[in-house]
Length: 362
Image (cartoon, rainbow, N blue to C red; front, side):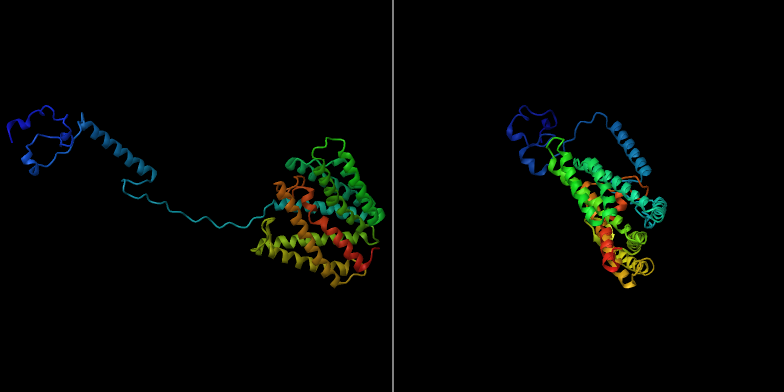
């Protein structure tokens, strides 16, 4: 090498294209290229000591944060997973306040039994009040959730008239009152704009049939000579069926009955409803109904368990379509009146018909 190779770069060193790839460092002769190793480019660091101190401080902070937060101490160290303790086993809980539900149920039962065996007319008034409140709950939820305005006034008046007509004139009177109520709903809705007329009157006729018309069969049960005993049998079998389904389903239920409609109902619960209702039916027909026999009670209990379950599923379908859990909040632990009538309404005509076939209408 000549002496000038350690000095400043020659003119044109950075400008010639063929020299662009030359390594940074001292100049060299071409014949020494195979013996020369390129030097790495080192950036100009104004204050390397201060940067090192900053890096040390940052590392120290990172280690402190890792120790406080439970994270890794070094970058390539995997964080330690916290030891997870298994959650304590949870007991099955009912979906409602059982104390409130039992208290309200006992209170309603006392009122019903007292009115049933003291004066029949008082019990007819209890049925009419339950029907009017149920209609109010149903029409209110239809309007809130679907914008359907079923006329409540003709439904309430016609519903109460249906109960009285069924008690006084039997099935013929109930059908006539039902027809007049439906006609009144059609005319009443004509006083408002035509938009939504069809869906409003359709919902009104459905509500008239679903609540008051089915409830007239309870009044027709009461019109017999042993009417209080027939109504009591109807109520006991429905309540026992629901209780058996709840108790057995809550304890042993594993297989869903209708998960898309009511996820809480199970096949085991249905078997419990059937077993409880058949036993109760045999006892009621043997000791409460004049001329009844135990085998008739078995059939009656089976029919009640089926109709009560279908009625419960039917209202669950309505509530699922409306996007609500309960029809109302009037009864603590139960929901609304309609939430208690769901099993009773479709069961009433079934009990009335079978009792007429077994022991007659009077």
